[in-house]
Image 1 (cartoon, rainbow, N blue to C red):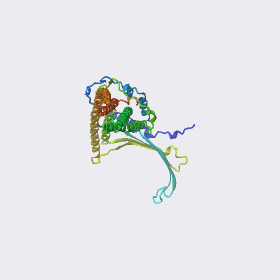
Image 2 (image 1 turned 90 degrees about the vertical axis):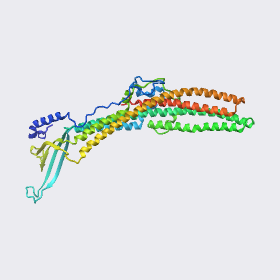
Image 3 (image 1 turned 135 degrees about the vertical axis):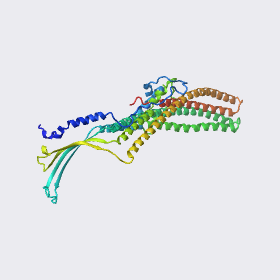
Image 4 (image 1 turned 30 degrees about the vertical axis):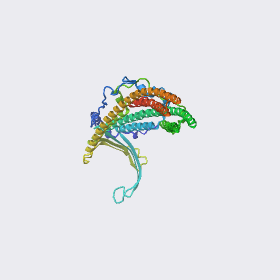
Length: 488
């Protein structure tokens, strides 16, 4: 294959440009470390040395392994809950949206980095032209074909670091988007667990209600027979009926909350409402918290939380934007060049050396005066940095509050559950005694009614407390920033 070497020529000026090129490269290297605007230093969240919440009821301020946090729901030892979590991580639509935003931020960083490199564009024209006869030159009144093809190059030298700061801002925004995705994942795993625990709790409450209804139906039937036999008055009959209907009224509410929890779980798994109905036809136990859990120390939790990480990266991005705005106060230097071929009535002349043209040289632009717009732009970015710093400090305070509240609620609810367990035993004994004495004619029916109602209420509270312990443990792990470590 023959190659026309005339297409790859070196213009005479280029041969003498080595000195200018070396000077330009030296200037770039000398100024490469110079970037206007503040240099950002990582901000660390201020945290107390130990938790304010009391380390009681299984709470331990010992080291918390990241691998344990990544799948914290496994502490409940519930296979269905673990399976639901994995399905939610794969299919949840909000998580997919957050991942898409992360990809967009990664592309945006790439776009920012492209400003480091020269721009090169190609152009070409073919035109039929006719010169005016009134001009009086040699082309007047003549028609001819004009051919032109060439390359335009432009390269902005980042003398004052505006491009560098822009890339730093894009990098920080990418890391903030990653923290956003981790925050969505943390909330998602917590929501799956909370809805699952609520569903199992309401199933147990429904089972207790149905059991009491059976007992109350027997009591009502017995009282109805006694009333017809004239052994009791209508008051006792109506009291037993009222007690029965009040218990029946609880069923609809519990059935509704079970259905809503099922629907919530379905949506969290990226499915339509009602699609999980068959998976919860059987009644399951309320997830039980382990005897002891490690919660680490405050400083570790602050650094781990996605919301704090996101706020810190937003602060870094805003710091870089100050530099971008400041760079607009200084001149911009570009290296510009054009090379191409141009001919009239080409024939075979278009690709000859006589058709070659080129131009090269530096260009400078400087926004010397725009009112106060450029200075005000810098001040605006500085004020936004102040806002971002305030938001960061607020995020730290709210995180500390959330963790302390979750730890306290978890421990105190377990203490409450111990008292409720004793109350259930006493209520069961009270009901048996009241019914036995009523059948012996020693007390009126109101004592039985009160004992049954109290037992139902305390057993219902006991189940609610079991569910609340599991929910509070879920909130503890969410507050500690768990659930995202396994997915990057």
